[in-house]
Length: 572
Ligand code: MN
Image (cartoon, rainbow, N blue to C red):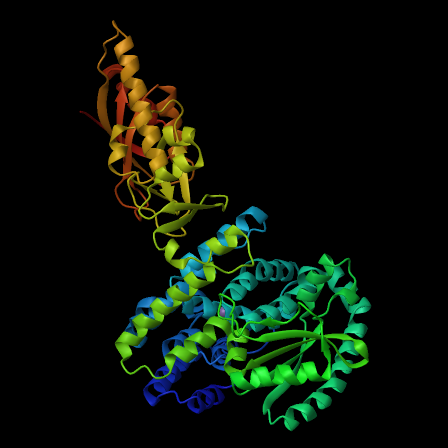
């Protein structure tokens, strides 16, 4: 694989010279950045981005920014090439795609089943643009081909991640062929025993079946020719091993019950010939009733079109045939990538084209929501536009929490548990303290600092976004009003103060501070820090205490905390 052969392939697909120049420049930058790096296979690293770009080209996915981004996809994460530099040299679109890929690279599969669906959702939502996912899938395809060179312990994790995250996404995007390939690449690493079983028990029968079909092909060819049907190809479609294994599980491991083990696929030039070919097949062999499916007249909601029929074929063996045109075939194999390629052709205006493309995807995905085969979650995760106003953040343990856009740490805290919401005293986002009204971003890791006996602040109502948190806070204040009314004697105004702490940042500092506050029965109203990058950040805490003495005692205690250099206090 070389850049010259990639460029030649793109040229053969009529890619414009200006686009070829961009792609070539992307290659030169990537080659320079990765120079000296090796893959585990011992190959020069640049082979990997080249294969990634080549894969997309072979799918006819020849959008120039996508190919350029595929070539550069590992530069930001693995070579430290600044994204700003990519934006300057290759424009905002390429930079946007690479940023998307780099972000997705940070999502790590934890291997806990209940998180998988969330991860998939997050994956789709964070990609923002379907092209990012396509590059990521191409990247994974090459990584799976070279998995043998990866450390043993890592192989299984990567294979499971492929089966649980990547192949369902490929399927959703209608990329049947890629899904099958990824599954078969992952199968032996993810489930070695099952794979071995299949290979020893089934492989031979499977191959016999394929040999059998090879005898059928010439008979069919002869008859089609007689009817003047020009078959562009009669292909054996052997079921992929992993999906065969899945199907065997549903059929008591009995191979005889699986009719589409190997099917014959007839590709012809137009729709008339599809029906013509169906007639030829039925003339040769008797069809099984109820097994004729006309997905040309009635396409599947994802756009899949074909005629399927199952017949008592040569020697009365039950055999499936699939008949389709070339274009139908490409869409069945490559799904969204093929749709893209077709919508690409013949659009005169460059600017308008991009928007229409984007719109087209959303439209397509909407249509797919209606697809029959799947659970509710499955359908849910198709709605990329649904995710437009959702964000996905992580707990420190890696659980994915789904919140509305601009949700704050308080919303997050209430989402985890109402008690955590009520006792929420501060928050760390990606390891740094932030004000409680900070809008959270996709993939932020959020940690809530709680203080026992802390009560919600009324001020929270100004910024919290979720209805759940709002109702909880409101309810709290309604309760409080009632209890005030009940109390007749007690009338003590609490003393408020602002405490400023200068300290070196260290793990556990805030926890120590907040436990002192609770031991002194002092409530935190707000907690802020001045500069997130300062190694000696100032921490500002507004508190509400019983009286002045209470505050003085607190200041003394705080001065004893490890790392604290200075404590200031201002009564409010
Ligand atoms: Mn990569």
